[in-house]
Length: 317
View 1 (cartoon, rainbow, N blue to C red):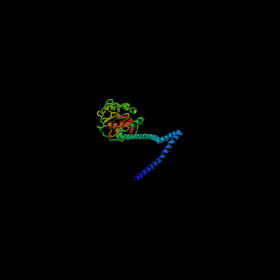
View 2 (view 1 turned 90 degrees about the vertical axis):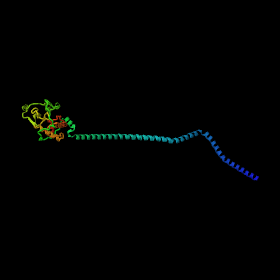
View 3 (view 1 turned 90 degrees about the horizontal axis):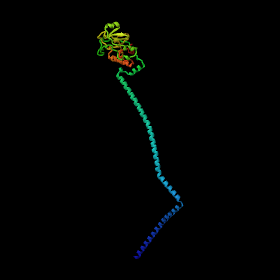
View 4 (view 1 turned 180 degrees about the vertical axis):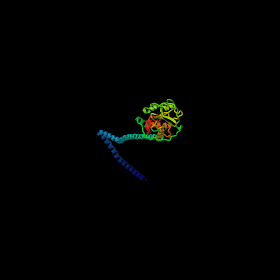
């Protein structure tokens, strides 16, 4: 038994020793390689120190370039992109501004045109709504500036069956005022208006009127009128209770009686839209207003009565 145990131990020692030798053999080549590397380094350092430094510097630069290259390129690209975006935005803004300005200007012009058209339509509506009696004063101003009187076609005098009694509600009677002059007549220039500038209301009895005007006296609505220089005048005092709706001259054509002249003027103004009352031969407030409107629109002095220029303009004389 002892011999067997000793043999086994011997074998174990041998195997252990053999394994240790193998490990030593494996470790020796590694040590040799490391020793060779260490030996080569001094040789490199001794023979080419400068080149090694250059190579190392170059290597670091390449590495830095490789590392920084993408970042630099990225920065450059970003700057280029920003410039391009800024330039594009500026160009687009510049293009938009003229377009916006042009659009705003066009809209403003269109707005002005629309306002002008609306104003014209409103004015037209106002003129139509006001009626022909309120015609534009522009015609009057133009005619007055040119010094031309608008003259209508000749109107043939008509005969009207007028009432013998005046309608005093539409044409109230006026009262006599000694020495009364026609207001504003001092501003009416021209020989045709001299009769208005020189007129003065006079009161005389019947004998006086007959002695001065003989057969140049006619009656209208029971009131006496005397004829002088183409006009009819009220003969105040001939009949103390006589009715007069107007104290002043009335121009007549071919000695037509005053009520007939007034009726023809009323009918003519009625056809032209100035007079809307009844053709009654009375020169009351409504008739005088229509005559004044016609005179204003045709560049005539607003005498508010029948004068020679007005009767000629109407085409009656």
